[in-house]
Image (cartoon, rainbow, N blue to C red; front, side, top):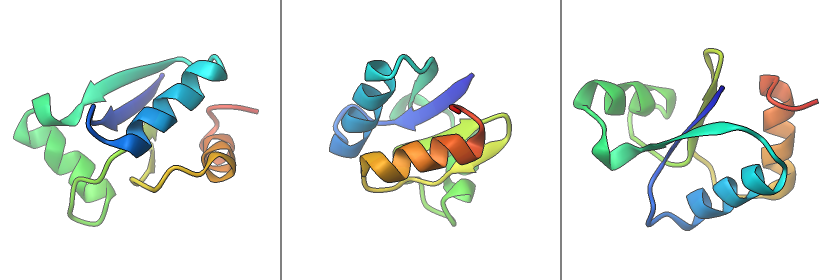
Length: 84
């Protein structure tokens, strides 16, 4: 299942979550600020050393945190194998 590392205060996270819901894409929401240092380090490593949200992970494939752009998110989800 798609994992979404995000923060409630992040507008790009909110938009990403809404996109996933609107498109009936199942995901596991993970509030980054409530995670252990080990989890935060994994997310930071996926982002070149800093924890940037929203960061997505699906079957070991990572999408670093980015500004929300619907077309780019859709393309990345296809490349990750989340959607067809």
